[in-house]
Image (cartoon, rainbow, N blue to C red; front, side, top):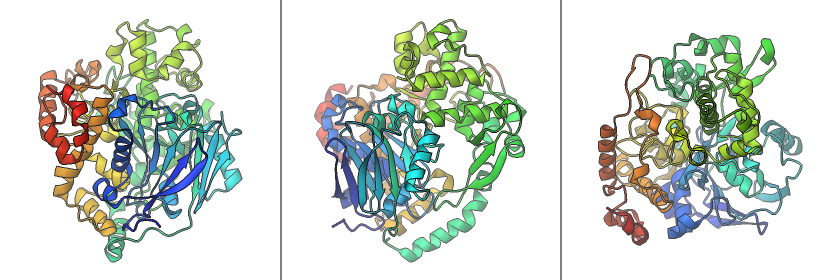
Amino acid sequence: MATKIPGYKGQLLEIDLTAKSVKTVDLDPKLARDYLGGRAMGGKMLIDAYGTNWGKIDAFSPDALLLVLAGPYVGFIGCKTNFVIKSPQSQGITAGQGSGDFSHELRFCGYDGIVFKGKASSPVYVTIFDDKVEIRDASKMWGKEIKETHQMIVDEHGDRTSQYYIGPAGENLVRYAAAMTEWYRAAARGGPGAVMGSKNLKAIVARGTGPAPDVFDQKKLLDLMALARKNQPLVRRSSIEFGTTPGVFRTGNVNSSEPVRNWQTEWHDRQEVRAENFAANQWVRRYWADYGCVVPCSKLGRVKYGKRAGTICELPDYEAGALEGTNFGIFDIDEMAVSTGRPDELGFDLISVGNVCSFACEAQEKGILTAADLGGVQLKWGDTDGFMKLMDLIAHRQGEIPTLLGEGLLAATRKIGKGSEAFAMQTKGIEWGAHGTRSGRDASEISYSVASQGGDHTSTASPAGEAGMFGDSVGQCGGQGLNRDQQIEWLQAITGFGVTTDELTKVMLPRWATMNRIALLLAGWTYKDDVNPPRTYEPLPEGPFKGKRVDKAIESQKKQDYYTFMGWDKQGVPTAATLQAHGFGGFDGALAPLRA
């Protein structure tokens, strides 16, 4: 019998791919109260499972867990699915959040999440149709790209299902592969698609016909839902009209914090990438939404004319337009429509592969790599075809250097050498989101350096901790635009947990950040790794913030202030008292030798 917890179904689905077994596990009410769901709950489940052996667990081994989790908001507003893993990139805890309807379908099937264990002996996919769960043969899907995989599932199971699947990048264990849904939506950061591939798990398919969970205060929740439907579309009107596409111009032109040609500069004045140009020339459908979403921001587009005519794509959001557009020196919006779509088709984390490919272009520019090193591909800024050819080689692990690039920038620069680490944009093995630190108008000096997910822009740190962990844990898509007070109101109406803003900021978020810090320390990272990439210490070469850069002295002081706020010592190691206060006293012995 499932545990009775308002806002939850009270049970997890545990699937052992080695044994081909399926069972349900009751959800612990204390786990739900202290960690809520999604990212924080997954992190706690992982660190409990691995303990002080964290550093010895191979992220690709059958012993590694893959957690697919829903938060308590799921079923009531636009939400994301959390894929929580030991990252094959950072070796720490990471959670990739993907949009779409999957988390809702999973909850309507009666589950708060899935725990995958073991490894299938051959390619499989899993179907979850209410309480009927099956492990099926996926040999015909293996090797297929994302769109074809999606169509094969729809042909077999109908278009009322929701799915997550991997492409060639995940199958070939590219460490930054994504779990994809609906062609172009991704749970990507940290490499969840690679972990799926390591388990021979091609796809997860769900369709639920059950009700949403019972909640603590139904009337209050219905009032909040009605208010969100009325107000949030007004508050977030720009998001509905344009999504995050305006950032492709504004982030570079106004804030000087957008990657351009592998972050060699972060400013541009290319008017052709203004959002209204995309809207006038490419957009077919103004917007649509996922289940429960009150701020529909998705766009469908197509290229009308020229050599790319007929291309159907999701119009680039900011991260895609920046990492596969300006970062590649591409400012033609038709070319950008193509270059931003290819990573999704191959199943990449488009942020990581965008940084990797632009790094390779600059390495060629500097004579560190040659076209022969890259399978005959000569990369040039603005040449879409060259970048797409390299993506294909990386996804299929073809050639020595493309295979190495599939390991990520940290591993690649360690082997390539020749000063290449100076222009590799990564922190703790995870490539940077498209938000620079040099101008001071976007990310700060410590946004990535002390963050628990390294270069992940969705998980940046501030002097008051990592606020994004809360949204990731309750499941809410940030595009819904709820402020912190509203988020707390929603949580109380759904769960009745009595969480206050004070408890969240002073107890829960520090507890979760400390948990993630423990994993990073056990994985071998130290305070010496809490730094920005070398390029950020170089002055911006142009634009209104020309000459600005990350000041190492300011970075160091802010880092120490952050450690103090968190209850960590001067080398970023949680003190014995902090560990005890947060319930992690059992790790004190393992961390004691690391303290200053």
